[in-house]
Length: 485
Image 1 (tube, helix red, strand yellow):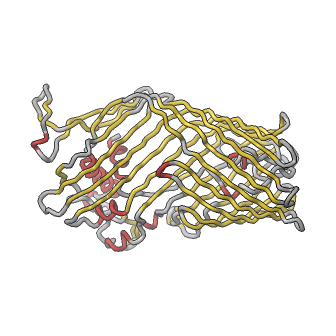
Image 2 (cartoon, one colour):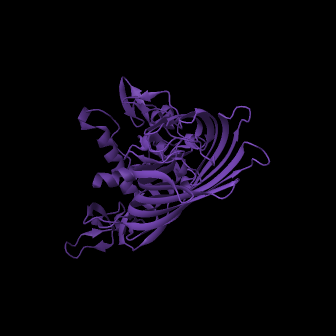
Image 3 (cartoon, helix red, strand yellow):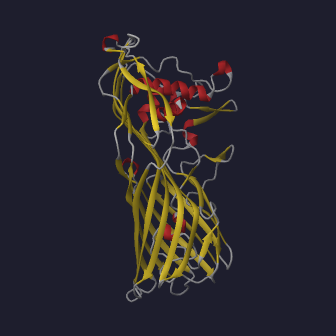
């Protein structure tokens, strides 16, 4: 468990990007044949009744961020090394690092899901495993660990968050009249775990070769039932601040830090509720073929039963870390990549000087709200082609992002449709596409929101954004065109 703490702290300094899952598959928003459009707008109705293949009904694997694998890993003499390797110059290591770096992970994996027409509308049910995570940090942290100089560093802030929960959702879409279709979804949320780590106002004075001084305000909150943080005494480099005395040993120390983590009888960590709300309006009386849609997804919260806190005082202190840090990859002197990460984590742990505050009780937190705004137009001369413009904004504090996407959709028959789309947003430009086949008895779709053209071994995309979506479902009614969008 010590390694887990070290990796969490090391994430403030650099991001080892890895494959993740993405919740929203935006390429499907304007595709009438998609079974899962209700996840983007609960007013949308699928063209058939269906049940999903467990775990594979809607699987999306991808990356979202403005820092890619190719920005922190390099090829030197045929070997893959990190930016800390001595053969990677400071100029090469920092040339693709942004002033503000952000990485977002959002998972929704269906365990059970289905949809059916009843009660004068369309209904959906689902049990989904969800994981949300994000990290943001500035360029100065990379500069500090790679190009250490006798100077002042103003790092600013950095943060890491994650939460995991199970979602049980019930949705209903209803056509009010020839113009309006509205929908809603009620979600019961069962929390498993949550972590939020924040580093604020980190400043380091390294001008003196003999003594470094630093200030950093850090706080880590963990919401896990049955978690116990085991403490140990820690000393300051400044001996005058080691004022506490252990009555059992007479040892003088400065504070209690985290020695290990124990998880005893884990259980449900929290409970919450959320709503999805959506509407579609058909302007057919004014402009035939024109429709507009609006949705709010994940309007809700989770109340966590336990909140375990570790933090520091934010006072200035003497710091001697980042000296003789391991920087070689490979087997030489056992200085492997894992050793390097552990070593960096040790230095950062000394820098943050986190003190165990124990369990502070329950706390309530939002899960992040997504807003989708869509406008689409169906050609009147050839109604198999439709154009759509989608604006997506995710509101989640420091992890907020936005994307605008234009798509062209083609449905030559009632059991097959496809599209190609492109857009721009917080994480740069994107190119997406989707193919969807849905005759009676079988539905298969495949596509990408962010197409990638270059990958490293073993098939890891080098792009800052990349994903791959695939799904298998079993429709049990004849396909038809959706009546609302």
